[in-house]
Image (tube, rainbow, N blue to C red; front, side):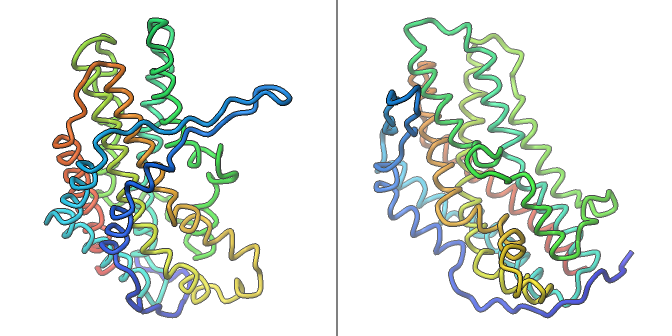
Length: 325
């Protein structure tokens, strides 16, 4: 099926900043980002307020070095290349056709870490909270609070209306049919299946077993990998999304609210939003290690990040194939 849905003008990416450049800038400022990271304060009643809690993150220089190594790794480089090629193929599409509908279907599958991993971590933490000894409650609560900061925006607790943003965008492109089963991209569904398996791994194992604890830690590290990847990905496409929307749907130029809604999905995830989520996931992982008496293994974090980057790169390779078929 190759029916044209809506004609559009081609947007040729005038290369501004690459995913690599976004990553390098973020990692260079990593100590500053960690120093500013906090669990927000909370009004309790009237003038009574719980103060913000600065994040406790150890081994920052070693983490910074590891992240530079991950960013420069050949797997990450290849995956970023496929991602930029996919976005560029999307931007250069002259029509919103079957390939674009597959792009939106598959792209959505690559962004399910919050629901398939982070939210499951939060649910597992909540389910076990009653079994945590009193002397460990404060540290356990710290883990939960950092994971809340990872997921809150995606569930509308920090960014109201988040759940509708993808729909606003695809509707503005005349591509609402992306949800239909014929537009599934198997490589992207395979990726979301991987996320699901990470989120549920060892969830029935005993709370104090090594298997359970390792599964929780590795899920948190996967959340770190995902959020930091997303920071580069969204910032790349954010450079072009308004121009592409206006090319596809010129009426948006005269409707400020509609344009804001249409580009809200991308812009709401750009800037430092995803990177901040990733740092909260890392702070949660370290806090969980202190709680569970585990070593925070930076080498293992690197392995998980590189593995994640390779998997998401394969998904974007599938998106590129769908767009250029």
